[in-house]
Image (cartoon, rainbow, N blue to C red; front, side):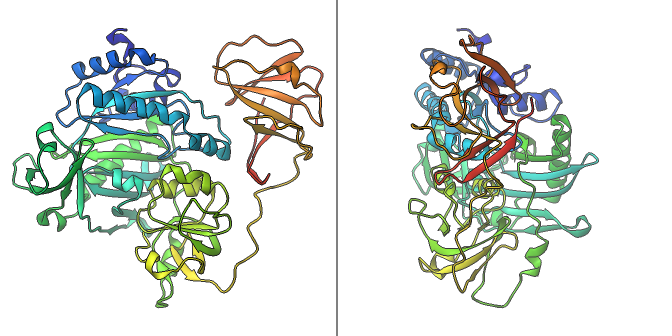
Length: 530
């Protein structure tokens, strides 16, 4: 393969080959927005050619502070499902072996069972097709996330979370950033943070330094930081005293960020946008990701009303609206259905547990724009983050009420009846989407079953399904691959989903589909136009 097989962000990219993230950044770069350079390893780039691709990237991509291999899946950053934190991105030293390992890890994350479980819960088709975007690792003075509602070409309602150095601790929820928000009359409120550790990509020489050594942070070398440790191409530095006293994000930088975010939203035709950004030591702003904001920002009007002198009430950041009551549990590996999960930051491995229907989530760290908060909002689970004392204040099994809109956790007198399923009616007009057919076919009143099948694999024996049993069964082929229609079937295009192979002898398929949970509750229901 040649260099032309590895497109750059300054080219016209397509989602089917470059994934959503890379294609979106290429659109922003074409519009003149400040996007760092990057090279794409396409979806179908053969595994045996990856070592050559890695060598090509290292030759073309100067990387004094290493590289970052980032997920750019075909199913990512959608309007209803963000996949926030479910795919891997990894910083790597600029060495062939390290970068190859990082690329392979990113590709493998597309096949993780968590991705499938989340996809089903959100009612989307997650194609296991992953491009990898490789960029020089930025060494930012600060970075973070902005979420905004955009009206009349400006960010009318917004929230910014920022940290010194890399934003990874912020988005993973392990640290709570400095928070900037709008209030009534567009007044800006700032909540500062005590950031003990700064994470930065390091040079090869810095990564060899022992803990306790000093490195320079600014171009002039006037600010130095002491190394705590280093790992996987990243330095962990003690925050210098002179930086701890300053704001992370200045008012001037904030206004530039808001203006660029509004332009990005117009470029992508979005009214609600989620942007990851970084500002380098020279003050230059970089956009590193932009996607639709899947769930509106939490209305914090109730948060101010929730102030109370009751020392039994714990306060945090309102991360996902709604109220939930139940006994507390401290591990996502336990049975958490109907319970309040008390945790630190949640990783992607916790998503299957979240799909079982916890009453609420309370996290010790993180903000409203962390992955924990985004996923709980998408799944409709009340969530409060940054409740720093919750582990010591609440014993396991204590019954509490969590108000995710007000950011409070308070004792409750009793456990309510377990939350009912999200069912909004019978299945008599609904097709149930599934990965595997049950034998015998369930007789639960559903109108049909759709077998979800990746068109890249062998076609199931459609003739074995047909109209036998209590309801018809069709095969949904995801993607846009050519297929030979089997005898006895007719193809039906379902916009946004794929091709349905449907028995000719069966009545027309229903226009409503649903995804069922482990207890046959409806996790998601939508109408499919034809």
